[in-house]
Image 1 (cartoon, one colour):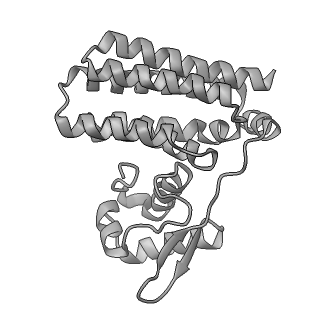
Image 2 (spheres, helix red, strand yellow):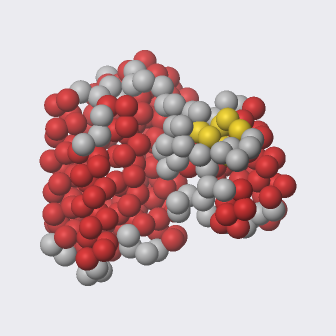
Length: 234
């Protein structure tokens, strides 16, 4: 849960809301699941439990969480991404602006390429190799309702496996900037099949310890996603 990193003291409430919302919208905590226990989450975010409760209450009031009391209680995620819709995609792009969209896609390309290359050059342990392969398998087996969440988990796991918190959080931020757009892209089987082949190429290159091949595979995949965005906007 790299996205649930410590917040700065000056804007503790606002940044706590931002961190929790990022975790929810990226699917780090799946719909219906609950956030980590309050004591654990407060330590992870580096805040008081009072600030955490205020942030959770705000997200509950906004409809993202359902707070339940009692032995089996907790803060449960109620947010479900809207179904893919080309009209929603156009609206999201209009709200963002084409210049900011181009900037966000360039940012994502740079940081995800960098993370994947670092991982490919790192000499993965058997445990890390197993995590990467498992993330890919989970994505390949996902139904349409879970695809975007597990796609995010796959991409973020590459950065997290580098062991660099800064790199992992930067990749999470880059993904957050385009997550609403990606969620709005209609999911066509031919595109999912194509993406599956690209994901496999990325994993194969990382496991082979080939940073150059890894970079090419990531570039091909992310440029394909950008082209798909433009296609649905044309």
